Image (cartoon, rainbow, N blue to C red; front, side):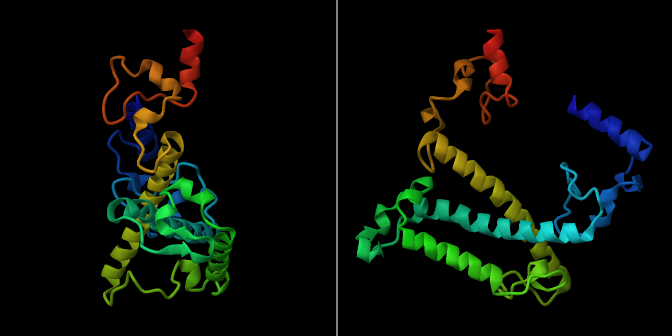
Length: 231
């Protein structure tokens, strides 16, 4: 069903059932098809139509936001994974409060354990990062270059490849950290077993035919309520 609808669109927009998408010259997305982050096999993907207006200023602002969110998500994802693999740091997180690193649970449970002064430091550091550089349109910072040279190269092609990889990894990390939040919140642990999520309305049907790894029993949003009503 997905395939035939896709073929209809491809045929209608390119003029051939196996048409080259390069022939769809009327697409408003083509203004950004040479930007970083446009990667095979999808190409420039904007299902929500954020770039339909063709505004380069809006695109640059959203790209700047995407880079920041991707970098924070990469750090957050590593923050979830590292303590589970290597263990906690030794010593005290807050000597005055007698709080050790070992006392901080991994994942969402840490939110209630971090002292107020710790949250103040986090907010202050975030504000410093935002305000310490000029990020207005046309500046290096607006393009994501904050002078912290980790992904760089003297070769322009290699540098472009690394920057594209950073965007791809940031997108993956944004998906990963949201998945970890859900897993943590619904199972009670950052690496919780989904079998612990006893409140799932889908568990009534998890032994039926068609329940297959790795997805298990999956439905579209709201369909479990429809099943419950018809049952």
